Image (cartoon, rainbow, N blue to C red; front, side, top):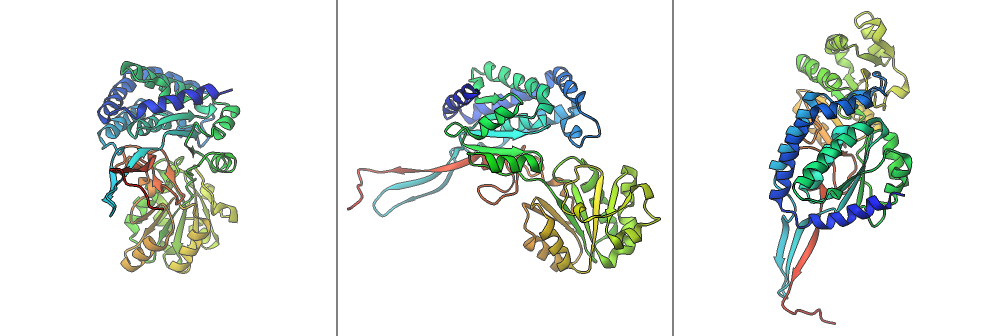
Length: 415
């Protein structure tokens, strides 16, 4: 049913091998300006999507576009355009004893498929990173963002045509289940598949795809506040990690607190009362917070509250007797996305950074920084929580593979 999409993008991907870094930079710079000029039309399309979603839905914030957000997306395009194009970079070269000259050179992955939910910014981020790294892309957005995605891809196609480039290098599939099924089975047409969204979406793609998959996992994020932690620093970092944007994968889900700092807990999380954060506290923490945190926002934690990605104004609190118990708790419930420690004890900080198994591990700062743009990657195609090929925010280099180039002068291998 959707075979024509895959045929077209595969053919178009061959043309991208001849695209220069200068041309891709020009396209992205022009697209940045065109997005700003098209703000009103994009917002009208986005409003049609927003009107179909309950504002209390955790995905609402991710779906919503504003003039400021469109400008930020446009600015990220310029950042990507200014980054060095990784294609053609020589990773290794040497001459063998028989005179053969070997080069290991970066090349595009080819055709990148991305399945995502209510995140229209992903449409632009994926296109920008794929174009700059020499890849074509197939986009499969969710029905929640149908009108937004269509409006954004229309702008992309306009700019590509202005540059006399094949618009088929980016294909937007219809937002239906059949399109997802066919994309996951597009062997020979799509080289790699990247899911972005809920754990349910990621699990479904991993379990059902016939293509290589790079998992961009859900973020079940912890911050451990140690006995040596600074209270004022902790207040600011925890507030930012939890409430900056609650619907994103780097938002804090569980505060792990050393038992010796229980008396400081009410002060530590007091700023979150202004944000109406519901706290799901274990027995010791609940007893300490009773009467000192708003009753309507204070709950007794259940076992299921630990290991939950809330994506909302909710926070679990777990008390531990030791640093090692904190590590054990994080090991048990972490999704290996982003984890943090707040401490002044340098030996414990180093242990935490070395021993905690996650794509991004922080000391005395907010997990909100797990983001491709923040890491200087211009944008991101996702945050990989796996260990093969790529881990953490995926930028231009993570969208490349390599090939060996061998030059000779008639050498033959002996029998």
